Image (cartoon, rainbow, N blue to C red; front, side, top):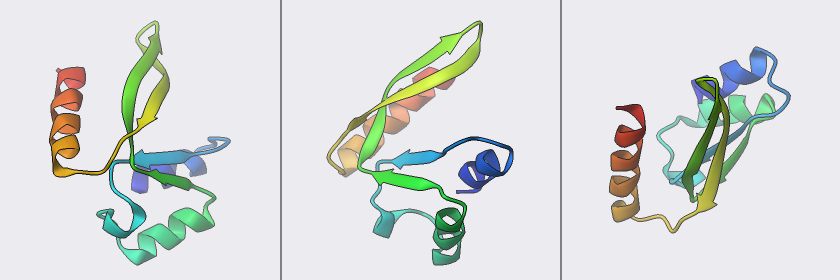
Length: 86
């Protein structure tokens, strides 16, 4: 939530946060969710990364896909992100 709010405050035209979790299972307090909504941040639950676009070592986009929410998908997502980072 903090990253999404900060991006908006730093001038992003729009911010859409994606997560595997639905709103009722996000690791965020109700106050954080309310602040994000007030800032105009959208949330799409049940979505995960498909592809990261970059140009000249700079992030250009994150392509996402709808995924069913499950513990297996969460574990697969963690492994995928670790590969992207390392």
